[in-house]
Length: 138
Image (cartoon, rainbow, N blue to C red):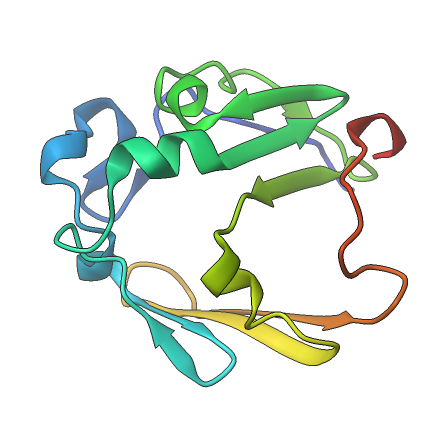
């Protein structure tokens, strides 16, 4: 039996709890290592500007978008994610970061002691590179 997933009111992973989230003291690097292909990404609080991140991450589900502030405020809680639903995460990148995304195979990897390691493989070609995101078609 496959049941839908309901986003909980409190998101808690290891010692991270979204309700106790303090953006001025948040350091994503202490939760794991992040890689784009073979390059480790630095998400330490000395490098990352939290206000910039808040404006660059959007999550789309069933035609609605949620920015990072809305997610932190719990506006996703209670939503049901059905088996055939799509969740799109849109991350706006600066020009230097975009240069890393060339045609070909890539992967994004998270190594963490809190959750199982995650590797997301993707490939860029002429059908999906430099394409405007249209939330109506997802």
